[in-house]
Length: 354
Image (tube, rainbow, N blue to C red):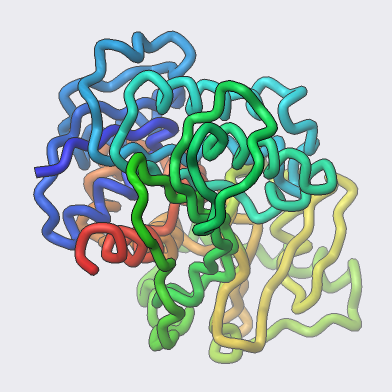
């Protein structure tokens, strides 16, 4: 039985993945500052301890883990954020992750972040992170490098960008995964899998009217740019990346959704972008704001929270448990903040079931 702990735990993608694989594990702790995410997590999992803040936890009280997972905040490194990296509080939380690894010495860790981490500050941010993790006797992607810092963790680290659409889910969501081992071992990331499910396969058949746009809003879209046609749902097969900015109200939220009705990106005066369709059978990346819409029989609607959870690989049973304790707004946000279960499943297979 492996001992597992997670920071920035969200709704528990690693735990869901271990269950999916039938890997016996002991949930030592979870941690998330979002009280609503905590509610969903505790409906789905039973950790020994749930911490509310990684910065205040006593790292020494946690027994040594076999697996540590942290999807540390990505806003600092994302094209959608301010990209201030370590100069921003959320960016510096990586150092709390590193400090915990230093104290706990887990046998294996998995870190996740946005693809933009690679290019932030001309690659210096990524370089700093990998130096912290590997310097002092470790390796990066199988290669020994020159130490540039004195207090590196000495782990053997492998990194790669993986896309959700390559692992059975019709969502175009690219994330960098950083897998580290305390002791030397070879590791290969999972190969791409055929995409058998399209967007239409995850959609609900009977959708509440509240998710549909009013005729007034549709007319507003048409008046905005008449040259852009709506796209039939059967041609929209892969969804855009789900992110985490649903905390918009009424007209602001509708305005972004209005600009999400077109096949190409349309920049809003709020700084957001929106999409209706792609031609390769996937969705765009889901965000926590669900700033996207679909069209069927000339009716336009948003994805439902259940559809967003499905696009992150969670089961309907898991969704309905979380729905008991959270609103639509929080369920959208939690989906956008989560690591895709299917991707995590394939990584864990390569670690524990190869």
